[in-house]
Amino acid sequence: MFTKLQDSIAEAVNSIFKPEIEAKKNCGKGNCRGQNKGYRSGQQAVAGELPLSHCHTGDLLAICRIVGRGPVRRRLLEMGLNSGTEIRIVKYAPLKDPLECVIKGYHIALRVAEAGRIIVKPLNS
Image 1 (cartoon, rainbow, N blue to C red):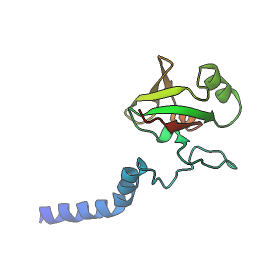
Image 2 (image 1 turned 120 degrees about the vertical axis):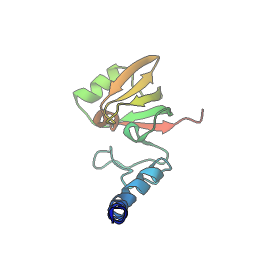
Image 3 (image 1 turned 90 degrees about the horizontal axis):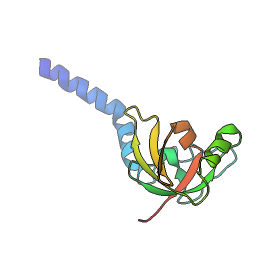
């Protein structure tokens, strides 16, 4: 009886979370449902570009632009996150916020919200 209860619970959990798990598996392949996430309203996604917050550990990327205005954008630009700069994601924190990147030889930790403002494209290296 106990194994039947376990099986029914497992089936219920799988039916609830299976769409989310499949979406996360396909996300790295460019099939994200929220691919425009990280863009401000009125801005369109360009083919091959995505927010830094959507990238994976170990990815080597080039910065295309920083979206938005204000002190956060200015500070990111002052730290050297300029267009064309190479950036590599070293690791994510255990709860996926913040993420650690290497830019111009130094390590920087960015909140996921800040990383969503940085639009990058993958490098084929």
